[in-house]
Length: 315
Image (cartoon, rainbow, N blue to C red; front, side):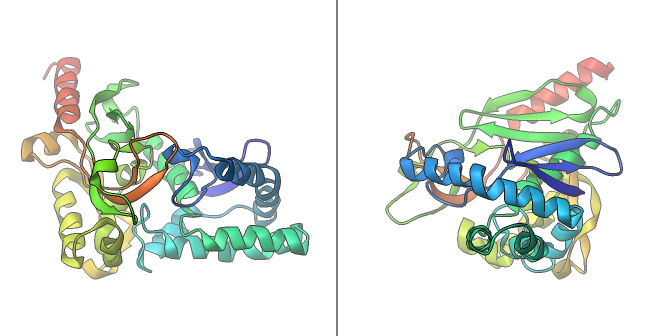
């Protein structure tokens, strides 16, 4: 995986060098009052303009000078340093900063380089967006396999939760999104929570995030639970997946690969839905992120997809 940015669009572009497909994601704004969680105050708009006009062009030049960053290798290392790749990206973001910083220093003035590096360093989610794009590039390469029951995308929009299945073409299967169970920032509670929102569930689809919680016991201080719960979450996900990941491994499990490849047949047969680490948006527009926690997709989407699969293949 090699990542580059486009200064005119403020996006990371990821290429799956094995299969040739590409994906993209915008730049990460950080926690709290951010556009992706519905906040749109002047503070949010000013930050976005700075990211577009100052940071994106610098990152584009820095990534070009670097020759690209192997996000899969970075993520594999971060999993050995206490990340799970979705809600906890402290190690990965520092590795990202480490690889970028010499090139940022080379292509930008001292003042601008300091601004950019400080912003990236202060944001523990800096690497999340290129990680999401990398997971998308990985999952898309598995889509369109005739007869496959493997989930290749999961996403939600605050109203509905949807999945896409490899052997079912372009169709999406949806049901109402669930409200996450988690911990809240000061001044907020479960009464403020919106139904689950966002496309970062592509990380769980690719075998990290909630599926790799055993690699990140400290994640429970952010999403609730105990370190044992983190291990139990990963062990449960082996029950509904096809394989162990070749590159993403977990030290605490004797370097076993993360559970990867959600199989709709196993989900329905065992009655186990995927575990997802997620941020929580306020139910009122304009407030932004108010917490983080855990959520599961509605079983209906897997049951509906399995019925569609049976109809399509005459099973």
